[in-house]
Structure formats: C-alpha cells, structure tokens
Image (cartoon, rainbow, N blue to C red; front, side, top):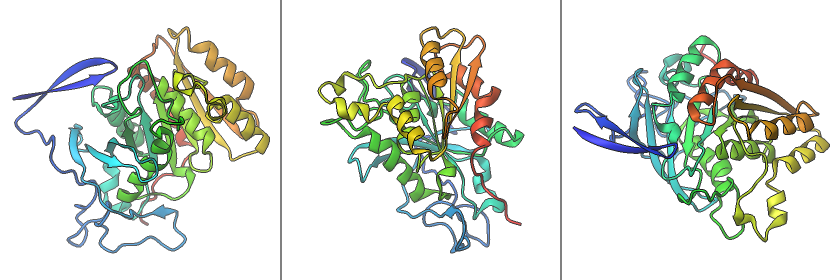
Length: 343
C-alpha cells in the first residue's frame, strides 16, 4: 500500500492509497452519461446535443484537458487535476476540479453549472489545499445542494502563487515583472473550465471563495472584474495588497486595492456584487479590518455585503467551511444561477 504526502495548511499530511484507488487514472467528468449509447458534458462528448439559441448555457469548447484522479469522494464523484498553461498569462500551473453528482445526471445533460473558484491561504503552492477531502468542501457542497442551501457548483482549485516563497505572496495580481497571477486566476482558470464543462454564459454563474490570502485574491477579483464575477466568500481575508513585490509600483498596487476598487464601483453605480465575509470569534487581527471595510463600503450602491461570524472559529479552513454551512453559501447561492432540469 503506497503512501501519499500532502501539504495542507502548512502541515504535511499522509493518506494511504489502497489497492482499489483510482489516483492518477483518467477522469471523465461527463462523457459517460448513458444517453443513446453516448454521453455529453465534457469537451468532445456532447453527442451533438445543443442548447437553444437563446440559452444561458455555454457548452464546452474544447480542447479537452487530460484530467487525472487526485481524490475520490464517498459519493463516487472525483477530483481531477491537470497541469495547464494559461494562454493569456503564460503561466503553467496545476488546477484541481470537482463536478457535483448532478453534472452527470440525464436531466441536466444540456444544463450549464455555476462555477466556484476556491483559493487557499498560505503559500497556495504546490497544492491548493481545498483539493483535500479532509476539509470537506466538495462533500459539503454536495450535501448543501441536496438540502437547497447551495447551488451545485463546479469547484475549480488552482494554485494561487507561482512558487512556495512563504511568507512572500503575489496577491493574486499582475505585479510588474512577475508571473501574471491575476490573469491566471481571472482569465485562464475560467477558460480551462469553459473548455471542459457546461457553464453559465453570464457572470451570474461565476464566483470566488477563499481563505486568508486567497480570500483577498477572491475579493479583489470580483471587485476588479464585476463584469465577469458576481460573488465571493472571503474568509479571514486581507483587505489591502501588502506584498513587498509591489515596491516601486504604487499605481499598479492601487489598481489592485479592494478599497480603491470599491470606491470606483460605487461611483460607477454597478454592476452589483455580493461580498460574503467570514471570520471566527478567535480571529482578533482580522475582525477590525473586515468590520472597517463593511462599515465604509458595505451595502452602499452596488456593493452588497454579508457577515458570517463563526462562534469559536479561528483562522483555518475548517472553521470557514462551518461558516459557509451556517449561512454564507446560501447567501451567495441565492444571487446566482443554477442548472435547469429538462422538462
């Protein structure tokens, strides 16, 4: 029996790989739907089925990515991983993807699914810790979608930084002279999903979530690109960019500052964005920053905010999944579009 090492939240954890593991094997997210002997869902596997001309659905464009199994959930759904080179950023990195059980159901074979881009805290490289089944993000979304708390999101989990240089981060941004991590997160990762999955054409089907530095990156992405993304769950986030890589680039730093972006969005009057903040009662340093942002910009003009206070919660991913269960996931889901079953 082999042993797999995984860095999660800075701690190396080990998982046994049993004799029946599918780790490393090809993952089919939708081609194997048993409809008329063929399938539909991922690029190249739609059996010619097309949505109506006025449909809100974006069918996969291809080319199909060669996803490999990274984890399998108890319901049989899989987390696939692929190494992807972004056409716009030029950055090459890993992206993990999970699709809910509904994605393969016949009633949804021509429906688009909303996408949640999940970003980790810490170095965010070489793994995105949300791909680990120990945190329960994917299994929770599966459960919540059945309970009506959540849309059945496709979850995309890219690397956040180009290398592990903790505590040096790239702020999910295009810092001059550095890898274009902002373009990677907001252009290339969505493009990978559009190439391989049935999605929602409009921003009503696109959101971010993230913890700590990933919470900042998700918050900033929605405020910087409100035409592409509608909502975010920002857990224990930084509010302003603080990487030392910004030194000498004040103009570019300001263009990636959520406070500056919020002022601009309010002045412009839209599009409307939905920002769900979370922090635990044990997060002393995070609370005043988030409270100040909400007091200054929250529920003003097009900026809608929600605050989830997690009792006994601390600055970690498991606390944030608990907060999502207690209200945040439903709040953003209520603002978004989900798949429509065939009549």
